[in-house]
Image 1 (tube, one colour):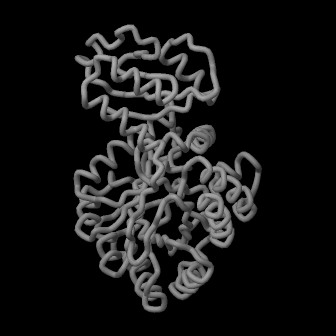
Image 2: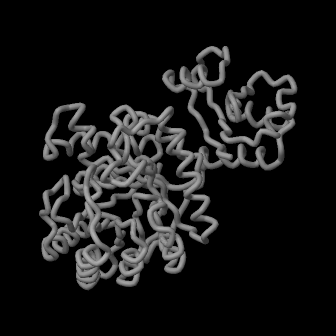
Image 3: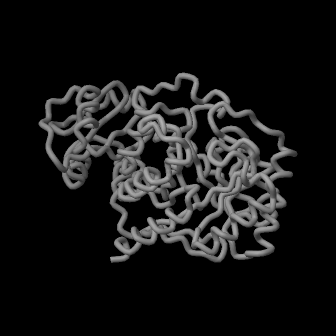
Length: 375
C-alpha cells in the first residue's frame, strides 16, 4: 500500500482526482487529500463508508478529502484497519513536519530545514553539459577545489554519462575515471563531502573506501542488487532516484497515466527496501529528465510538495536539462538563469538539495533561501 498527500487546491490536480474518483465536491482553496493506493481487495470490500462524505473509492484506491483535521477525524470514525490509520497519520506528519530532519554526513550536520548545494563534476568525455571539459583528472580536481571555496556542500562525481541515449561503460573504466579524482580531492580538501554518482555497487564500494560519503544512484538501487548492501556496510547516505529505464532507452516514448503517482509509488518501494536493508540516511530524487516527457517534468516540479509525505529529504536535479531548452529554445550554455529560477521554485515546494552545474548561482540561491528559513 502507498499513502500520499495530495494538494487538491491545485485546479489541475483537483480535476484529475475528480475524474478518477467520480466525486462532486466543489473546488475550494485549502482542500487536501490522502490517497491510499493498492489496497487489498478484502479491505475495499469492507464497509468503509459509515456515512463519511469525504471518502471515495476507485478500484483498489481510496481517497479522503478535506483539511488534515477533517481527514483525521474521519479516520477515527471509519472502519479502517489500524495499519492504514497509522499510514495516514504518518503521511500527514511527514508532510507537516515542523522539526527538520538531520543527517550526520562526515563531519557535517545536514539540517534539512535548510537548503544545500550539490555541485556536479562529470569525469566523462561525453557529458551533455560540459563536453568532457573535466575528463582530465587535474581539471576535475581544480573544479572541486573551486566548489569547496565557494561553499558547495556536496561534490557529486560521476564517471559514466547518463544523458539520454548514452551507452554504459565498464566497471573498470568507471573506476579508473573516478577513484583518482576522489583521492586527489580528499588529499587537498580532506573535509570535502563527496558523492559518487554510479549505479554499480563495486564502483560505489571503492569510492566509499576512498572517502566518499554518499552514493547517488540514478536507478534507485534497481540496476544492481548489491547496492543497498554496500551502502549499509559503509553507513553511507544514498540518493534514491526514479528513472523509467536505462539512459540508452529511457526517452524512447515514455508514458505515464499520472506521473506523480507513478514516481511516488516507485520511490515508496525503493525507500522501503533501503530501510529494510538497514540504511538510515536516505534522500529521494524524482528524476527530472530521466524517462520523462516535458509535461511530466513540469508536473513533477509543480507537485514537488507531494513527495514530502514520503518522509525523506528531497533532491532536485534540474540543471541545464533538455526540457528547458526545448520549451525556451535555449542552448545548453544559455540555461543557467532559468535553472536557477526553477531551483528557487523547487525549494519553495519542499526540495532541500539542488544538484547544479552552476554552483556559484546555487550557493547564492541557497544562502538567500536559508536566510528566510532561519526565521
